[in-house]
Amino acid sequence: MKLRFGLVMGLAVVAGAAAIAEAQTNAAASITARQEAMKANGGAMRALTPIVRGEQPWNQETAVRAAATLANTAKAVPGVFPQGSGPEAGKTDALPTIWQNWADFQNKSKVFEAEAAKLLQLAKAGDEAGFKAQFPNVGRTCGGCHENYRVKK
Image (tube, rainbow, N blue to C red; front, side, top):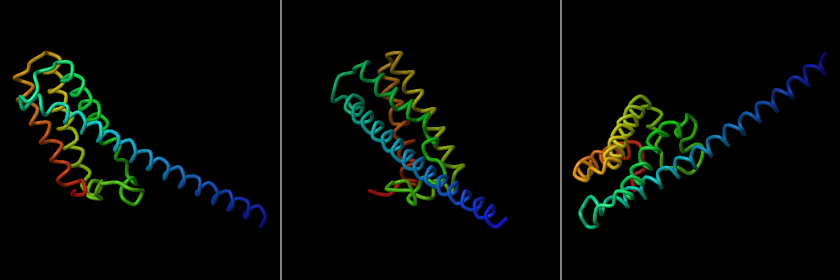
């Protein structure tokens, strides 16, 4: 009986350790995925800013490609911010306030997704004026999250 109990307890410890290791791996993968998504967003914004400012000519192909990046990564948020993937899980600029204010974070994510989708629609339509007018809305939604939910740089 004692042997059986010992075996059961040993298996439980091993299973628990495996679950912790898997959660840590998943958290690390989530951190990496969101860092890559945010880098992609930054690249898209850098590609679009000179066009929007009139420093470079309108380029529909660039606008569609960059707006698609923004729209696609917007859909990934908040999925790349699962519980347990904050600073306790690894190197990340995500603040714990994300999970403390989850409903607000989700709402901000949905607004970003909607604004990025509008930008993509305007890019696909070749509506340069509409695109340039919509671009600041996307920037504000990014900044709105960064202000409350990202380590200040």
